[in-house]
Image 1 (cartoon, protein in one colour):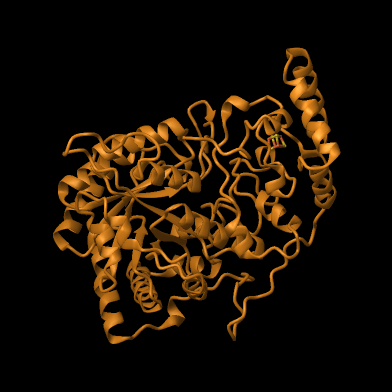
Image 2 (image 1 turned 180 degrees about the vertical axis):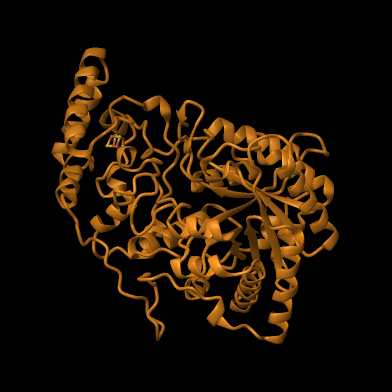
Length: 508
Ligand code: SF4
């Protein structure tokens, strides 16, 4: 898992100050998150640009990140503010959210960002789209974050699409892909999945990490230890968010998917002055620097550059004086689950597979029909291939598959069945984001971000796993490719035996 980060800089034709700063172990990298709202201009945009001018003059912040339809709401596309920030002289870090983009739009945006000479993308699934024009927007999630990072890496390596051009002045296609992890999950299943998926994202090509927002220092420490144990050397930025009292209350009530702000902290913030919140953030920044994070990803609402400058001044002073008081900055998650035991080097024991349900039976039937080695499977394969030769027999088989799998698995007939990879639970009907490579970060207390009355699909998967499954098994599982939408409503049985589904590797 050890990464040679210098390799990632090799093809980079232009200077990427943000990533160079991350690679320089002596530098503590600072970024700040800008959130463009609805509309192309106005006071909010003026304030963002004013912030960028001040930050550039100040010189401590290396990159400004720009959110992409944050919170599932439509807003000014990040390319607009990103270009202006670049002109001002700062490095933009573009959030690349997948909730609103299909794979064509993803490529199209990559070409746009290539043309704009952006270097850094933060790849994330994004919050489920909210109701807007005529109601709920269609959630896309055509590729997940792992598949998108993989696509970018293949394009960089020249294995897919011609992106470097023939002339000596070709535009660089040298994006550094960041990814997100939450060490702040409450349940074992969610936390184990977060770490396993992080390792998969790194395997796909992520070169830096930004954490979810959190206020539990022990969990930050756990992440550092987990990465060290797994010999992950890529830089990690800790996310320090300074909410207004109203936003803190909203977050504490679970209003922002995936963020756990302890109610005690939200209550405290109601009676505090702004300066108290800024000083707490400074203490956190200094404390996290001591823990070994490569930098801080700062954010907040209702802040101007003077506020952020105060945080940076104070953080530097506290760090230099080694005067960090954990009491005022550490707000543990109540009943949170930890990967490590409080003392000693051991992991806590994992408990996957406590509710296996019908998985063992489904697994047995699957092996009998699809292994391709026993007589029943050989006959079933021949039967499916025969049915595929004629329209009527193919339709009859599709009808039979639809009835059987609708009853057993709530099947949506996607045509490329991944049931065996998800303990015989269907991600197409079970996960609102239809994720096939692990969960998003939006769950809360084991509950789904989109349907809080339901268990997160991947928590259910975890409870059905073989009991011997380890975190490393989950992380090392093959990365499933994007779905081929031409298979929709066809027979996954035929597609499997005819080599049309994901089990048969495709050429680019
Ligand atoms: S064919 Fe697709 S929709 Fe049907 S059970 Fe399998 S994964 Fe789910």
